[in-house]
Length: 160
Image 1 (tube, one colour):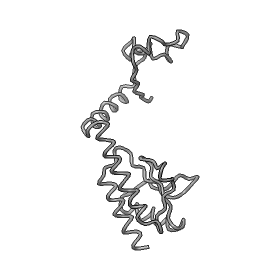
Image 2: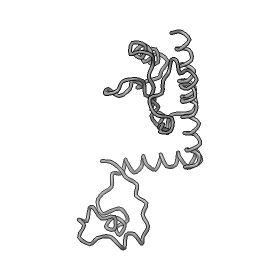
Image 3: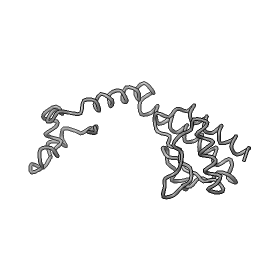
Image 4: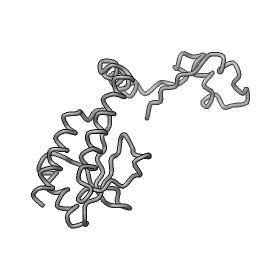
């Protein structure tokens, strides 16, 4: 079972269509204080912990600043070595969460992935349909983790 947090205005609930099945109506859940069915308690608890963690990091503004710093650091490293690292997304459309790049050839990409694994950088192999390298820099990934990746990228490039 999954958990979805829904934030809705009460005036919106008053306009809900009456012919919706009870399970699909936010009004049903609001009228029953989200207890129309037994909620997935563990998922709700984990969501609580995550939201507290986000609040402790400065809330949404704090997370935005942290994630901006992470993606800027990683993209700067890619852009600083265009002869070796090539970002795959147009600069105006770059993701904040999944930073993708290519190296000069697939053999070098495989060596990069293997060497990265030895440094504790895991799960960076690109999607099976497009290849390349993909750094998933989700909220739980720290700025220090990104610095470690950037430092590795510099060492790898110099040794290649």
